[in-house]
Image (cartoon, rainbow, N blue to C red; front, top):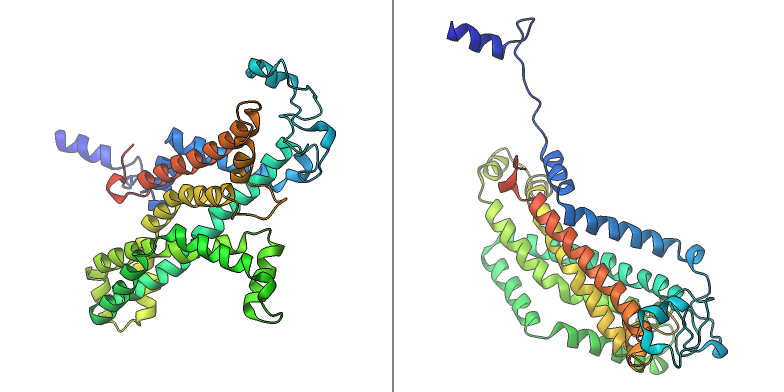
Length: 341
């Protein structure tokens, strides 16, 4: 009788076995990511920031570079309610949603356009790092032996040089000697490209040339752990080429941790750009950057705290959003949590 009940539970009404479709790895990871509230909030904030940066010309009430000297340091009425100590001396003007800076430029518009700079660094910098680091680390880890030893010693040497100092020297050299560079040379072309991009080109180059070392080490370690697996040996046995093994068998198995690592590193890239702009080596004026806005507002933080705190708040929210999303991706893509809630 018990056997009949078990068989009826397994078989459907037509006598066919009832099978449950198994979730793919992507579906399982997406399900766990969506259930992570912090990651969803972080992703939503990032999407909102991207939309704000794209549609900044439509959202901004004024141009970010126009100076109205008669409106220096004006604030809207709600700022006085938040910072009542400003009431005795602050001039009120509701034409500016969050106030104007020391030369009469609209702070709200500059914060909107500043999101473009931070998001550009957040996406382009890691992309350069990912491409260079994955290629370098894959070659080192896959071939191993003497090739691996030489390539990793090069990485060790580069690690000995402070990355931030390298970026500062790179920016200082090209921007201080631009008048001495002969037209038609590669350095002159790079300098003009940096000028056309508002000072972002050398920031991208500096971050890309220094951040790939960590990615190369991580990629090497992952390749070393995967290349000894049975399915890699089987691919060698049937005569698969090294290139096919790398792109069809190894890369899909290590891409998840690499993407997670780069996502978690994005706040560091954003803070690097903000620091460079804070000390005057970031984007070129009048291109707005949150770091430059914080630097300008720091000089009057006691009198007009909104000029410092608002861009600082935007910077903090952006970095927290990427941190939350990175943590969520790390948990969602962890194969040890597959099938868990």
